[in-house]
Image (cartoon, rainbow, N blue to C red):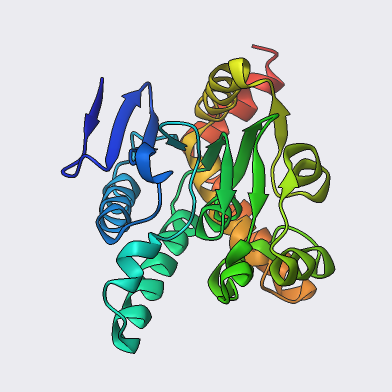
Length: 256
């Protein structure tokens, strides 16, 4: 059953170890209000402590995935301290996704702009409807998408990211896939099935392997090559000590 998680702006649905968090501000194109960011951070924190969760899907109600920050809310309190806190709050949510022990899949329809595009880039995987479009378009309003640039530039090449950032132009789903921002595109009618299939595939794997793997994969990308290999070797050795890993390898050797 899908239920609000303390704020109706965010819904949660649990199904066999897969948690779907749905942005629920369709009339505002799921803009990231302070309340929605707070709800996301709280729920991601709870999920991080729940070892029964195998995979998380971030979805959105209505025609759009996410139109970025709530501009009306932002302009209602024009103070530097407020903006510092707001952008730090958003960055905390993005880091909560990155550091979550389990994979996070973005289910994208319609537009994903500015912090909405950042949200897609922060997720480990992304599947989009063929009609989806992506942009970091704050520059069109006089605001460079600085925090979205961090996630975007870690998904696509610097020149492509900077082109999007300084022009504010949209790219379509096919281009987003070609550039590496998303993993695959499907017909909108097939979007739910494609996301469910990917989540189920992840959930079917040994939980310890996935948890070791996501943390290692994220951390090693920031390391020099020699350090990355040393760190990865240590994580793999620790993974080998897991009971479920030993059982899986023994079953393979025994052709069971």
